[in-house]
Amino acid sequence: MAGIDVRALSVVYAGGVRAVDDLELTIADGEFFALLGPSGCGKTTLLRTLAGLEEATAGSVLIGERDVTAVEPARRNVAMVFQDYALFPHMTVAENIAYPLRVRRASRERRRAVAEDTSAELSLAGLLDRRPAQLSGGQQQRVALARAIAMGAEVLLLDEPLSNLDARLRLEARTFLKRLQRELQVTTVFVTHDQAEALAVADRIAVLDSGRLRQVGTPREIFQYPADTFVANFIGSTPMNQLSGRVVGRGVEVVGGTLPLPPGLDRPEGSAVTIGIRPEYLRLYACEAPEAVDGLRGRVSVVENLGVTTLVMLDCSDDIQVGVTVPEADEPAVGATVAAVPEPGRILVFDPDSGQLLTVAKPS
View 1 (cartoon, rainbow, N blue to C red):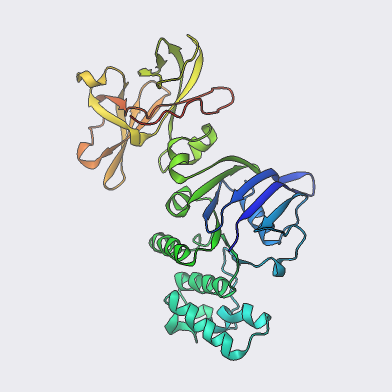
View 2 (tube, helix red, strand yellow):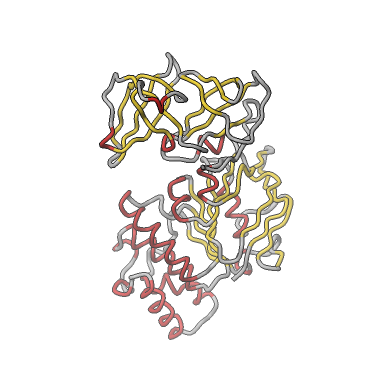
């Protein structure tokens, strides 16, 4: 297997559109790495450039110790699973799986043996003589993965392979993908616009925006300590609360109340900051409770049932709302006046101009 080094890589299309812009990235050998970002951020272009399907305008791509920037796709020793799986409709499952070996002129017996072994690993053993049209979406996805695995490549590239599956199959498939990658120990790059998928399967995540890296880190780091307000807004099943405020003593005055500054962060008196708090890290209290002194007071305006939890929206002013996630048993009544109190160490402070995170104080 092999790691990947991307060095000062740029991909510029006609008209000067910079799909990938001077990007530096290192992916470790055997790592499950996710490229995450909104549509048009450059993640698929980057993946296709790693595969050799797009030409780099500048910079280089190394797989292991080998510079493959100018190497044709077939000689890079990478396997790619496309969003639509790209199975050959006239071939059986066995023929699809063994196709890379056919290109390499392996014997018929060798191709059949590899197809049988690989299909057994992916629960496809009883489907070898069927054609793609006779398979479900989940089965087609597994055939595409089996074909990629049969290549014995150093790097596995996955371009949104779960996007064509329904919600239930997506959950099953991402668990399967993670287990399979652990067993194979193959360096895997996974493109998705679904942050829940990236958080669930990846060892590390790169968040891209307009062809540039915003942050690289573990799922926990990116969720708890986003590098800037773009990442904070993009990551999380419920949006992070972001409130404008001013420093007063050791606290920050915001609409709805006063919040403490994180320990170790010194900002000039009266300076503007942006406070970030995830709904999951706020707790609701009745306003007369003493714990609610340093919190955000508001009136419950909307209650959204999320299953075992409930998203509660508080109106802290005419145009400022704060979201709080609570257990279903603690759901307040619409119209109730409550206070949302942050858990210790969960308040983030961002620069209001650059959007950059100013503190990474750990929870106490």
